[in-house]
Image (cartoon, rainbow, N blue to C red):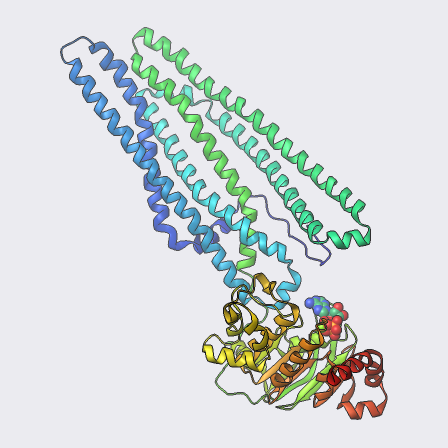
Length: 605
Ligand SMILES: Nc1ncnc2c1ncn2[C@@H]1O[C@H](COP(=O)(O)OP(=O)(O)OP(=O)(O)O)[C@@H](O)[C@H]1O
Ligand SMILES: [Mg+2]
């Protein structure tokens, strides 16, 4: 599987690999007691199942001949009570094992998801560059679910099936080993046929599932991109792709159905052959008096009983094999080492002044082209630096490096004169605020969203931050004020309101270093003025790096650099750069002149 981002899904081994399952089991080792308990109940259940034909044998050989004799009444009563007790025990067993297996399924699924989720928080930005979000989503949802399901219920069938087969073989051998061997002579064929079919059925199902997930991906894209496709006149192309994929899906699904349909008669044929031998050979033994009639009945029962567990075991083994890809993928996520981790000797004691320096920094994304080569820049504590430049010039990249979302390939980034790799990430990130171009709010109330800036902020501090961010005005007008729920990703607020809330969130954190990727999205003039005020307050008194789009921010900055292809073309404040009549002046006159007219109008209004 490959998409335009260059992500390729690796091919997974089709051989059964114990190592993978061992790693999955080790991840769930706290569940071993439950698994052991499940094992005990499954063996008990299989033993109980194996006893029923013996009961039949007893009834045929002992009870029936005794009918009419004085003791028969008591014998039948005792038999009835025994039968009822056995049934009750079996019923209880079923109840308990379903409970344990259900619990295991949920626990395994939860444990794997929790591990994967924790891992997602630890992974570096570079992982997300390489890995499509949809891929991660399927690992977290369907793969985790599949593993919980396969392991819990697979263990049930595996233990029960194996115990049952063993039980049947032992009982048959004990009753009459010659006849037993004859009846069981079909077993190797049955097992071979079962494995042959199960493997093919599961492979067809797997292909169908893969086609299905491709298809839902296309569905999803189709839904989200419906407007774009229409404007690009891609509808015809999309439909062709879609029907090709859904044809593939149908082909695989049909093959799986055909194989399943063929498989059942084959199993029944082998099972019936075993029973036929029991009847034929056993029958003549009964006539010769070498075998009791009851034993013959029990033999036929056992022969027919043998094939169900055999089929289950084969199915489970193939299912484990098929689920192996899920296990491998999930382990791939859980065991990926984050590219950026704290060094063993990293410290986080010192307070921070806020001096920043990029020293001979070179950087490329993955093995792409160089975005920066031997780039050096000093940002003294307390300075507000505005970065301007064409799209793709490296503004966001520089900020990502400063925030240590990526690390330089060579050279170093110094915070207060010390390479930031000598500090922990927590040290830097807890002293650094980052306001994104498109503000992202989380599901929850406005109060909670502001408090995400600093989790131990009091209500008063949250409200003070909202006031500083000029957000009180709109929050006050909301019916539930600070407790208004913002919806998933903040959809219930307007763009401007979201920006104000995200500025308040940065203010409540009160970091020494502030990084701001300014939004260009247009908001009404009134909100714009509010945002400008909030931004000014946010940047004052700290080391601030702003990817600036607002004229007011740029003009108020202590220093402006013009970036192009990872090189600083100009460096100075607004007035100096305007006088120089270079790149900044051109950019300014081209891009910001309209805005400046607007701004004056707003100021005049
Ligand atoms: N995650 C990434 N993986 C690979 N290449 C990237 C990635 N992010 C950015 N680039 C590339 O790095 C270069 C600089 O991108 P960057 O995002 O720093 O530009 P920018 O100045 O912030 O642009 P804009 O004004 O559009 O935000 C571009 O050529 C871009 O294609
Ligand atoms: Mg950018």
